[in-house]
Amino acid sequence: MPLQFQELWNLQQIDTEIARSRRERSRLDDGAALRQAFEAESRTVQELETRLRKLRAELSDAELELKRVEGKKTDFERRLYEGKVTNPKELTAIEKEIAMLGRQRGRLDETVLTLMDGIETTTTELAQATTRRNEAEIRWQEQDERYRGETARLEAALAALAPRREAAAKAIEPPTLARYENLRTRQSNVAVAQLIDANCSACHTHMASGIARKLHDGQSYVYCENCTRFLVPGGE
Image 1: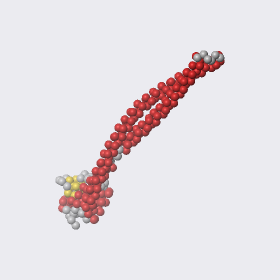
Image 2: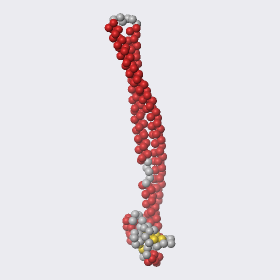
Image 3: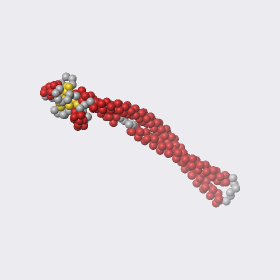
Image 4: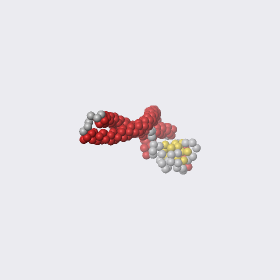
């Protein structure tokens, strides 16, 4: 049975490329962190929009209530000063009502100003949050596009390697291929190493001179004394 050094080395190169592509694919950034950042900013925008709607509704209610109180106070003041009410008790009651409405208007004035300040602050915060959300969305979409492009490239590379791998494996004698597959499973996908300057290119163990001589004689397969991988001739 002729030794298949070149065929083993070719298969190993294909398997190494497949493993590299799979490893690269597994390390791709799918943009999950950027998507989460975008979603967090979106929630902030929604919360601020809800708060702004609530503040505007409260301001509208407060302004309507202020208008009602001012109208009522004006009516009492008109009754007080037009001279038609002469009963002292009734006049006192009107004065108390005017005073009470005045205090109420004061509180409403303060409420309106507070709400207006809140609306202004929230509007500014909303504008800033919207900008952050839009920027976060752009970053996420750009990364997602890169991820999809890189994934497609690697999937295409793996698809192209599959028939090459099948052909390379069929070119090797079944017993030799079985040992190769067993070694590849146990040795982190690397079943074949080159003997370079009497060293195993995989584990870097220095081989005895007899190993190199036996390999170059080409009478039988030679394995690394340390890692047990196939050894094939390499550059001296």
